[in-house]
Length: 89
Image (cartoon, rainbow, N blue to C red):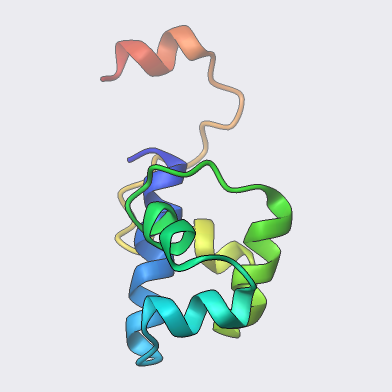
């Protein structure tokens, strides 16, 4: 799964675990509800500033928003080239 999708699913999961609506999270993060919705759906390419703001609003460390909780993410492939990555798909 692409990082943007992992990020969106983590935001949604953590928001729901905290029993927050998108509206409530949008207030805490000073973003619009539509923005939160698009982040959760993986349609928005959030900045690092937004990552930090959402982590603070959800009371987690920023890395928790970009870590694949299912463990499906490929590990140990930081130096892998794009060509190799595309051939894996």
